[in-house]
Length: 213
Image (tube, rainbow, N blue to C red):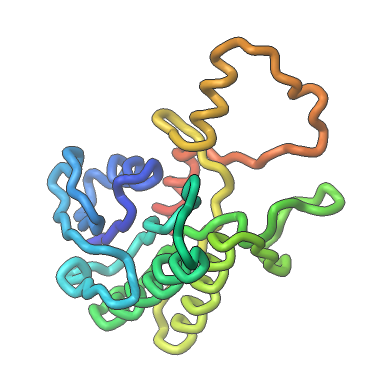
């Protein structure tokens, strides 16, 4: 049995489709109409929620859920809120996964943990020092560190994936806005931009990587 969090997001929906022949459980805040035969459990990702029912019988957890960037965020303490979900919530889920007998925890982190830009035109590597700048990246970085410590303490197999900007059919958010702008046929000064390149990953390739893990 595989437990997927954040299943209502772009990546989560594609994971469900790719794993349609597997036994899966879904953990989220709301139930959607594309669950198929999967088990659904309603819960928030935070430091105190109990996930015992959702984790029952699961050997692998794919943790996609996260607090992401919010436009016009009016939170009094944004860093605390990011940490509550992305750091403390992740560790709460992972610790309970250990207690339930899960063997592997796949954590979808972010390339922003590495930093906002590269130097000397060299791509990031797994051995590069982390340079998270915003609250989202810092909370993800802290979650990575605590997960790896949990793995060392308990034997839980932890896999950390740091995706770049994900694209594919049905994508929303920033990439959808860019595609909408391009589709309008408005001349854009892309030819003049030489130092603002972005790395992208196809959602199909990312899903394949996760399944391989």
